Image (tube, rainbow over all chains, first blue to last red; front, top):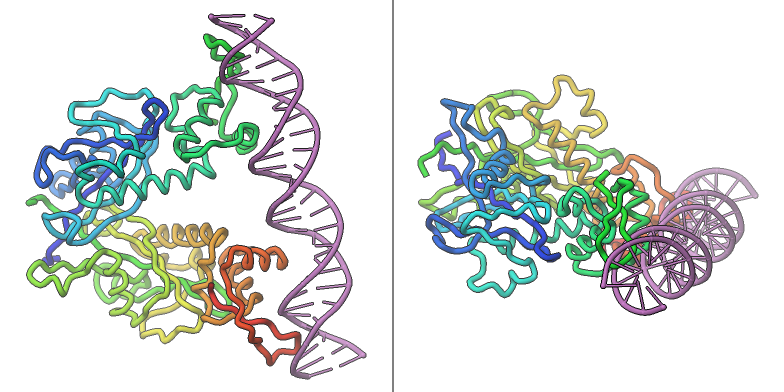
Length: 216
Length: 216
DNA sequence: TGAATAGTGTCTGTTAGACAATATAGA
DNA sequence: TCTATATTGTCTAACAGACACTATTCA
């Protein structure tokens, strides 16, 4: 194998909720190109044939390591999104980036310096826009998240471990960008067995207390 | 970038129908490792910073080139599946393979020497099994194909351009591995606007002739 | 008591599948 | 006419959304 090889890296779209809005984590770049600009956190794959204990087990391990090293974060959900490639996406030359998206629970948030949560619906009007093809990556991640939200319990990873059905519905609505009928939503959560009732309630509000649930 | 880099390659799961059965294309390996064994067709990404006209525009272009060069085939549909990675999947060392799956129309078939179409439901009992992690790749491709089949017109790419609704239903059933209710199937194709009636019929059978359709 | 949200029940239009009746070619 | 498949129509059970009624806490 003496041919030229692409640069292999990982980019992560980390979603979370901030005051009920769907946000992605952006990080200020500390190296060229685009030094100082906000971009998706990412990094190179680590390989070390001399000492395999120092290398990434797989590209997903790279993604997990990037989140841990650069942001001290451990996401409860991470999934491969798509692999972006070509000469033009990175000024350093032909590159391949395996994009992942991850979900972080609302409130799990001790952001290191240089990182921000940006509302997804504000990205379009961001100026300057995200470098590389990161806009495209985020767009695909949002599309995937919405798609899976419509038939799965994925948004459960955006909430604390205990939550009410009202809170869960609010999260679904934030992700999908539309309101949902209450009765149908509750029926669906029950019937699909996505949640488990705890038998405790959340008091302190001037209304009937809500049952607490966990992901099933 | 003076670190070690993974070997980047592409593997393609090419689906087609042979006598109504869903098959994948396997190709006899002409190089080590696993020389002489049946495996998914694949190849390395071509990069050439000296002469960009010789290089692959993207990893998808690599997949298309592999099909063309090694098999003289041009698939009407190709889509990225997943990226597999790690040290152990290839004895040559840490590697990354972007897997694609493609659909070929039934009948478009002038197979080069060393290539075969293997029924998907025969793969489990293949001995020796496919090398590398190709079994896993095919399994994921079948899963993706079935998933998309249940809500899209993907199997249209497995048929000749003109077909009857009966033929189309047979293809859906071959892909999904289950029979479908006729009336519902026809309603769905019409309502989702997946097909267009041509106004011509297919004669020659001892029964009422069927209308011919095309993908809409 | 009133406000606010939680939780539940009913109704209705839509739809997927079951079933079967009719249509039309060749043998 | 008979056989085989095409095509269409009807019925029904299941379900999603609309709507609204009841429940329960704090102010």
